[in-house]
Length: 337
Image 1 (cartoon, one colour):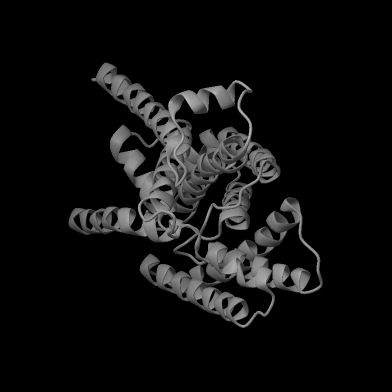
Image 2 (tube, rainbow, N blue to C red):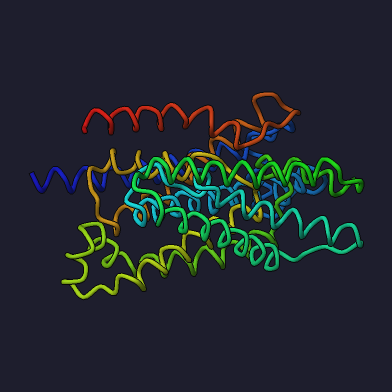
């Protein structure tokens, strides 16, 4: 029995790695400009010049690396929130955390662009983190007043709608053409990624993931119940603070660069748990990261190719593919009761 479980887990990781490689390669080829395998190999080896080289190295490669990193980060953020609230439908998007980050970024960008200034990647992440923490503060305040988690989710959705409405109003009535272009970002988009963006998000996500891995054992004890965790020597208050900070930072990083991306933080942790049949954080954390990367790579490739050269919002695509997963998950949970 134990042998079969081990095989299932390693088989699951092997499948996740294989799918990640497949979608990375697919995203290299996908686009309105066709590139053959020989052309891509020549460019990667340092040969070839002109527009094709620029398209591959300056547009497609940073975009697919960003999709991998941000998709993984969003999925892990959802997993941490689900652990904190003991609720499988908690996520940055549903609880309004992503929308809070989006609002603060929009306000900052409009204030700067209207004066002819731009914000650095680090500044955007900091501003998004501030917005995420403010929204999280409202959610935590509400959680102290409600008895049922379903009411908490409803309140989170309302917070998200308020922040999204405020953002849309700001973007809609902006005059500057650069500000108006924020509309695509506010709907969720990975277009316009640069290697500078990729370096910054890699640093933030790598450090955050490292701390999350370090907390895998305390998180496992916390999932067994607060009383059990205390008996195992876990500092509950510190762990809860760290869960909030880590999930908010990951969500802020995603929102700063790609805007709000829906349902990845809910559906992917559920799919990974179902596939691996385990609740161990040490296995689920990397599993969720790879799962989120796969889903985001696929949805981003779909968003920019299905109606090329017109590009869809990645949040719309993730909603189409992942909402059915969330509905099935909720129905099964209701049946188990």
